[in-house]
Image (cartoon, rainbow, N blue to C red):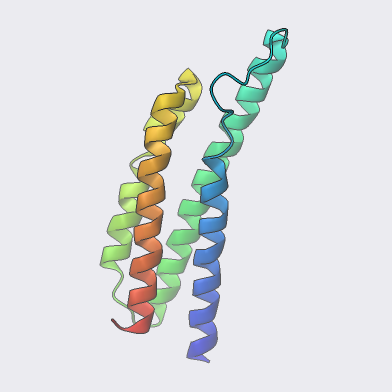
Length: 132
């Protein structure tokens, strides 16, 4: 039974990774914008992207919190995981600001930091479950 719970937590962590990583690829590459794109359309698409990206961020943080709560219910010490999720959560305002400002360089920087933090979260979770 405990093994099934561990597998469920591992699957949840995998889901977090799958949702977080593709968001970094949403911004188009520099120099690929076509002339003649309606500014209203561009504005609307950026707004959609901003809302979607923040929803994904919030969902990933919520899922990580739920995974931590599940681990705690089964007696695991999760203070390290909680600290990592707190560090991730601390990037939300900067992410929102960069999205609203359409600052692609800042978005790349934030996404790089978030990628590293989520990678650390996955590694810490695996180590915790394996008892390393």
